[in-house]
Length: 206
Length: 249
Ligand SMILES: [Zn+2]
Image (tube, rainbow over all chains, first blue to last red; front, side, top):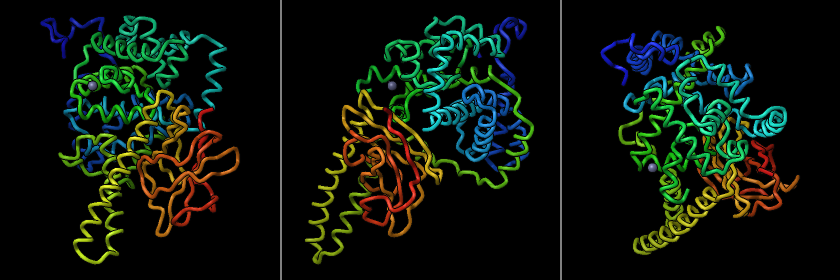
């Protein structure tokens, strides 16, 4: 952590910890995970309680439909059990691993063949109905973490929209480029630049 | 995605899962050989996890019951061996499959021959030819996947296997990628089809997962189908399709 200044925790007032799982829980999650990897079901139910909100919330954000989201989130949680022994602490936190699995599954769901067709339709409809920056805006105001909101505001308009549309709406970067009427190479670099700024603003380390 | 300098800038799009399936696989292959991109992706994934955390919602109570009950019948996967932990590159996977096929084919060819010398010569010659054919096929597959106008459609077969079709109008070609296809059974094969607006055109056979360059051009085709057929394939489908995907318009 980069915020270990002499002022202690009070010095970080105004920069609350990002979300439900405080940093101090990180080693605990890793311990739980190694017990889960050995088939410990009690450890898994504790892991479930720690991660299900993040997994479910993220999936709902991307998939939108509640019933489908529940199905996907359920698959993700069961996948965490199945793959527990393949988690490598050296490659990132348990939370990052779970979020990656959840996001991947959510994105797969919205990009499945039929969904893609529907989505093109309702995207066209949505595009006519309201401009995309408004969509991005709405996503943002529904975010629970003050820190994430604040860091998001530090991004340029296009960086913010590129990251938001890709991550919370599950759009491909081609779709993001079309939506924002911006050339593909620009979108790629804006996504990267946006993530660099967010990473630095939130003090993320691996 | 051909020039390396350009490739490194894909870390962001990769961590946000906003690359197409084919590009995602290509970049995963790049990561195996590029520690700096690997590091950046790890940091971006941790950053993305913060974005996920900011979207937290309490999960429905019945989901907890369903999951805790669900794991009772789910077998845990063994840990990856230290050696196989490193993700295999996309090209390496294709190569391995291609070479396995080449060797199997040359053994089958050699088995009917007599003398050891003939056998060995034949083996070496066939292996060489097969390897060249495989190498060409590998290049063809890569060319489609990396085409500037490549588009990917994805879907699941009725048996639950994941599939992607990457097509390029410029190349007039398509690549079928299957993951989790069950063994089609003895004396049977998977057969690919182009759907020419209702008429099914044979587009090649496969018996296992991996990337297959579809035979024939995509021009005129509105979709792609997959069936199980008797070994050797059929002129038209003889079973219900396991999969029908629309190609991008
Ligand atoms: Zn790189």
